[in-house]
Length: 156
Image 1 (tube, rainbow, N blue to C red):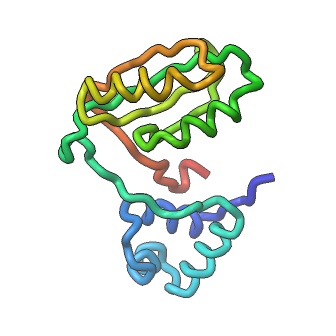
Image 2: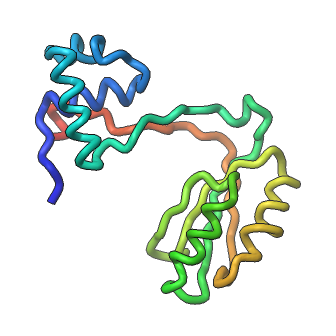
């Protein structure tokens, strides 16, 4: 069963979701608690596996990686998900992997330098994995939103 978070925990998470590099002393001021409280609560949430680390957000297009795509994957046997996952995980350009319901067994997100790079990733790496029956690719034209839930009293 999931640990129940209180208003202080949620305020801490919301502040760090906006800026993961914010010093705990600043988070503490915004949450109305001591920096020791922030350290203790973050440690407890990390130990419980609720917080698994911090990430760096990057704008791939500004770095020359102009193509992002979602790829729906049909497996020949759904029981082979783990084996396919292990192979997909080895492809550096695959940044997200989801086990899904509906039309596809899996959905992945891929970043590529250009269309030819995407073709190489799909043709030479993804589609050669055993148990992948077929794929369907959806190009992303523009990511409009990428965020965490910002918790407040209305979400608890």
